[in-house]
Amino acid sequence: MKTFIKIAIVLILVIVITVVALGYFVFSSIDKIAKSAVEYGGTYATQVDTTVETMDVAITKGTVEMSGLTLANPAGFTTDHFFTLATTNASFDLESLQAEKYIIPSVNLKGIDVILDKGNTPSNYNTILNSLKRFESGEAAPADNTKKGKDVIIKSLVIEDINIHLANMPGVSLLAGEVAINIPMIELQNIGEEESMNASDIFNLVIKTVLAAAVEAGGGIIPGDILGELGNGLAGLTSLSDMGINAISDLNLDEALGDVNAKVDEAIEDLSKEGEKVIEDAQESVDKAIDDASDKLKNMFGGKKEDDDG
Image (cartoon, rainbow, N blue to C red; front, top):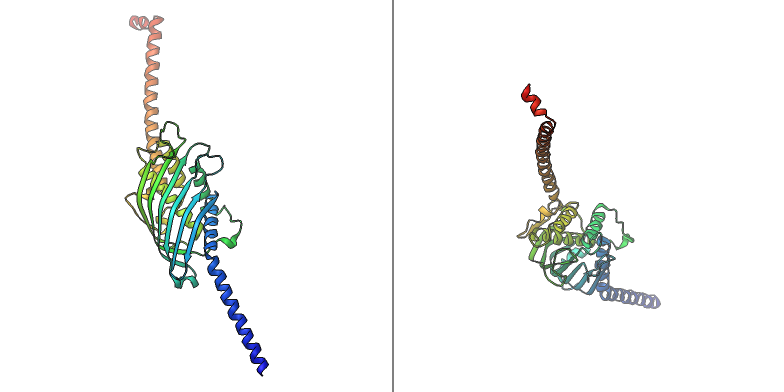
């Protein structure tokens, strides 16, 4: 009996030590796990290298702090990056750790820097937009489905201090180091409540929101052909309203996401009408020119004299 009790005590101690060791391993590795998930999510959505400098997940406090996130340029570009994010602060609901989805009351992204580089064909922004289209369509299959990550619901996502730079654009004197556009703040609400979203989906959402903001704020600063390219690229992506997301901003972001299709169709229709009028006017000019030429030929060969005689 005593032997049995000793064995039972030893087993209990082994179990306790194992649980404590596993708990310590999970807690000590949570930052690395979260960092890896973010880097994978960015790379999967955009098809460019994504790196994070630091990640601090405080489970007992329910907070996450991240700094130094960088989305590299696609191959062939010489500018430093496509997209950087200085700091991220988020809070999460501890009870949701065991739930089907993580509940995140608030996320704050501060200090975003984007370089729109036209120094290659296609441009870096068109390359990224094409990757986002493939991602939304499901064509860009992940290399490892186990890294997909748990779905999240974010009640409020605030994006502060967005800076847009222009580089390698013919006729534009601005350099990548100069800020072309600054957008103070955008808030997105109800993320993931209607449509399931994971880390890759959040990257897709943030990037297309920032580019849509660049289109809406870039009139008179960003060249028209660049705005057109961005608008056409964004038109192929799902609008915020279709995702059940409410955007609070001085900018009308939905006009640059999804609703662009209607604007493009309207513009094409107007252009078609103008084209028809131009054709009609041209035809009238041609007819008049032919008549004038005919009269001159008649005069030259005595046609008018014959008419007069008749």
